Image 1: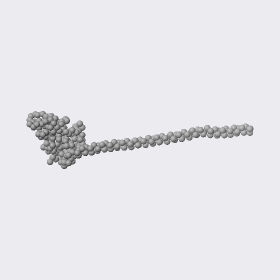
Image 2: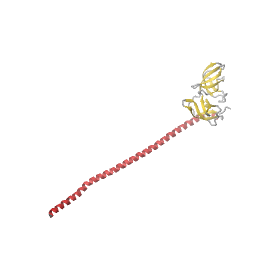
Image 3: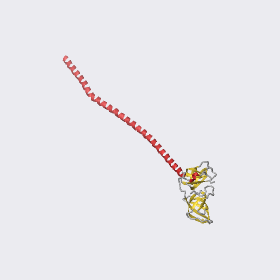
Image 4: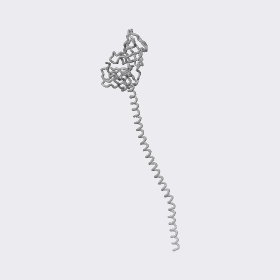
Length: 253
């Protein structure tokens, strides 16, 4: 009986010790593997977190850079506009008319409407809507200024309602220049007995209280006679569709 009990206890103790020993032996790799996985998991999580942080940081930077780019492009356009305006002012100030106290520089605001390049809104200080003003570009007659809704509107030479007094050639033949909505202007009511030749220069007569005498208008390219008068087709010297500034003739005396 004692022998059997002893054998049982021996076997039990042996199994217990073996279980403890082999359990540690089996558990160790498992625990190490688990620790390795946990460590890698945390590394992956940190990497992903860094990736997200970097992504959002880059997104913020991209947004900031886009805003800076928009500001740069806007500033660049403003600088280009100012440079163009300064250049136009510089060209306008080359005119001899700039020294005349009866003449002032005026700025173009816009076309009256798209598609009509012969009419412009301009900015005039102390505008008198009861007067018609003469408009000059680099000492060339460009057109007239009349009121529309109490605002000053430019009728360039080619506009059909643009009219002013001129003289032609060495004979100083008088006539009335009028726009023709084409590349030419027409001078009407020229006395038939006066000689006019192709190539004669047309200039302002100063008899309309709009322009000074002798401002250049253009050259005669053809003439016709009818009912005691002559009509001349004139190629105007002024031929710009995108002016920024003009010289306005306030008074001629």
